[in-house]
Amino acid sequence: MLRHRLTTVCLSVLLLATGPALAEPKVVSVGGDATAERDPVAACGALAASPYEAGWSGRGLADAQIFLDGAEAACEAAVEAVPDSAEAKTWLARVRILTGHATTAVPLLEAANSAGNGFAAYLLSQLLGSTVSNGVEPDDDRAFSLLQQASAAGFAPAEADMADRYTAGTGVTQDLGEAFRLYRSASGHGLGHGAYMAGYFYQDGQGTDVDYSQAAEAFHRAIDLGDPAGWYGLGQLSELGQGVEADYTKAAEAYQRGADAGEKMSETSLAYLLGQGLGVEKNEGKAFVLLSDAANQQYGVAQANLAIAYLFGQGTTVDVGKALDLGLAANSQHVATAAGIVGYMYAEGIGTGRDLGLALQYFEEGAKAGDKYSTDRVAMTQVELGCADQAGSQYEPGGASHGIEYSAIEPDAAIAACEAALAQNPSSVGDKVWLARAYIAAERYRDAVPLLEEGVAAGNPLAQSTYADLLIDGSGDDGSGLAADTARALQLYQSAAAQDFGPAQLALGDLYLEGDLVTADLSVAAEWFRKASRNGVADADNRLSELQNSAAPPVAPSGDLAVGFGRAGPAY
Image (tube, rainbow, N blue to C red; front, side, top):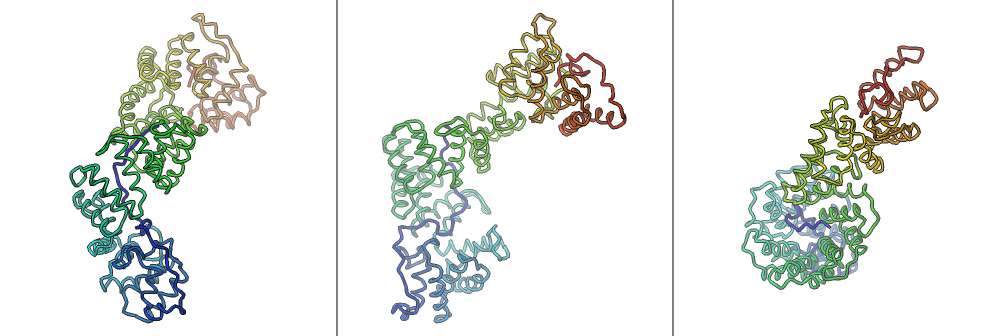
């Protein structure tokens, strides 16, 4: 299973998605509680304050904990009773955002922000900078200014968001030292994510000196503040032997604690240990379940590793379609190993048409990001493209810029290029089919046939169509004894045509036009010619033109059926 360690950080911290260990929300009966009568603002705060506001640590609520109807009633009463309260306005605005009434929240936030409320500045920043339609006119510049303001006020989620920006250089000049300072400050203000990131910076030496002892302390603080990512950090220290003796068993125990809380990085790392049997009994099925949950949280590393599981049937049945989708999803998140996975699938035609040009792009992308597998495949793919240029078909997926007409093949050069490609990638069915095509151009049928048979068994449409060209009337003056087999030739053309391989569609059109092997049917012939034309076969347009200009069946170009219905050899 491919392994990828954390080298980047999230670029945003969702508002209050995680927080310190929170007390159970207190129930406030609006209109009947003595506390509410004495202090309506406090009653509102008990139902809608953030745990990162001064005085509300351990008492404030995450979004999902808010009883929206009760909070809205309490906070409306608080704003009416104390109209100058910036806190009450901010909390009422928070509730209205959560109930989908962002536009009514804006005036409240503007007033609270003017009074210097950091939470209000943060909420307003989120509304103005949101990419999701919320009825509020976007203003990225002001959103950023408000974020800076909230961060300067010590509101922990804003500090972490600014730290993310300094880490990635998003909207600011990259400054890992400033990012580290802000993460530590957010940790001090009670944000578990800030503590985890401070630990990661200590562990990796970003923005500060490497200090595994401080990293462990920060990871423990993250756990105490309610962020299970701290378990992942502790697991990494044990797995890698950083500041402690390397111990897979202790690493697995830490990852398990994080996984029990649904923490995606812990799940992914525990899945790796389970898949390899390191520190735990090997269990690919359990690893698959963990990866699936982490991937469902849109964690790119898990998506890449889950793609491998589907690709090779590790803990699940093989599903190359899911593997490709997951690989592409992970690659969109810039996971280096994902580029290698997607490149491999395009290079070998697994779950998609073979496209070496596109594969090379992915391998180069992965190599640039430091993926060793991608780096190794770049040179190999370049050699294989040399074979494609000499003997591939332009009608294959990805062949338009690299394939060649059969009549243009230079046998000696093509054979040399494709034998070199197979030396690089001996298991490549596509390379074998191209070499077979080069052998046929050199009339080395005995050498070509086993390669074509292998391609046919793998469902390669070029192998199917090329072999059908040989079988239609028998070929092999070199003594190979390749006898005609028209029934199999027809079946092979049909199989290739079903994969939208244009030359096979043209061949079937010719058969129906001439009444060879099938009953003549001009309408069926025309339909096959139209399909071949849509797939770029120029001869199909000529056939259609002949059909349209003649009431009687046109005479097909003369030539031996053994060389492809008048085409210049086994074709395609």
